[in-house]
Length: 98
Image (tube, rainbow, N blue to C red; front, top):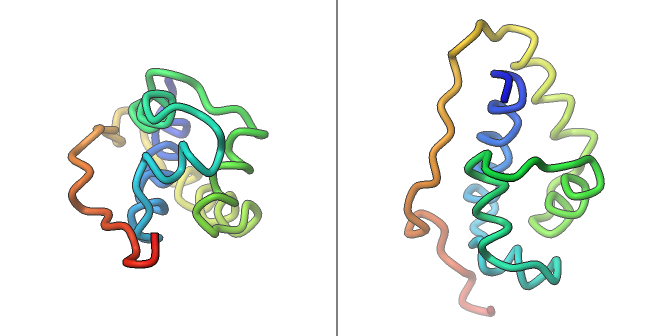
């Protein structure tokens, strides 16, 4: 994948973590498997626009705001600058209400 796409995926994962939502919670909200969410976040499976919109809605992030922020950063990228990892889930903690 291109650096711009890798940046999108990295920012997607960061947005989920900032929203304090786990991959399991996203999967449940979307009716998908946790494996599919993990594969999106590690660039093993491509995210299309519909998936991106649904994913962002599931974590409470506006699609337009997200893509505007992504575009601003993506326009400044040089090849090979983005590393996408599928790190541990420990950083995102579910709300006590979930």
